[in-house]
Length: 240
Image 1 (cartoon, rainbow, N blue to C red):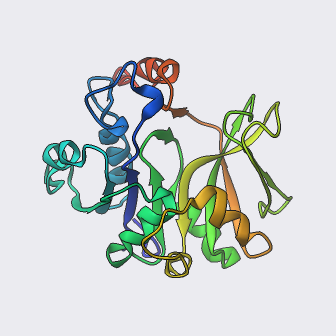
Image 2 (image 1 turned 90 degrees about the vertical axis):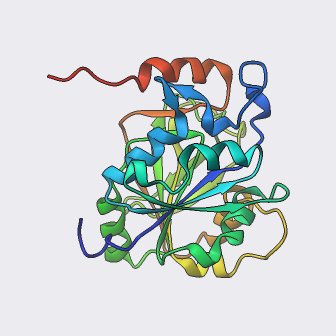
């Protein structure tokens, strides 16, 4: 672990209602969906540990007690876990703001319902090199319509965010992992719902915000079909 990433903590957004999964997952939070014989959130936490992160804050809400009882202090995963529980849905920005006192500077923010292959050391190197306020992990997909798309220039600077269904075809999407300066969190309004993706990030266009493209595994378990696909995609690989 490099000095530049040694003290970075991660905040994981896992307070969503998961309404689109209710037909197959009615008794637990979306991030606790079983994938490859363990909660999906555990796969994310193990990945963060592999990146060198040792402190994680879980932003809980819907059925928060299930997450808290399962992971507890995080010691079994080699982590120190704190919890920031929403009393009512605050959106991605509001959830991060609620946990502000726990966060490092910079901080990694991760969606608790998607998995992407990415590198913290590479994202941090880009952030330092470009003095970036925000680095978003992007993913190349064949159809951006479900997710919305992101445009970058030749230097990987983000120049455009496009809403869901406004564009179709191949392109880059926001993969749900952010390395951001805490100043962005400090500027968020407190005690109200706000979306990082729809309200905050577009306002940062023109400032030093960058994308880092991943072309490895990506899966968002937000709909039943992709939750089913994750069982194979994220299954443990045989030892060779």
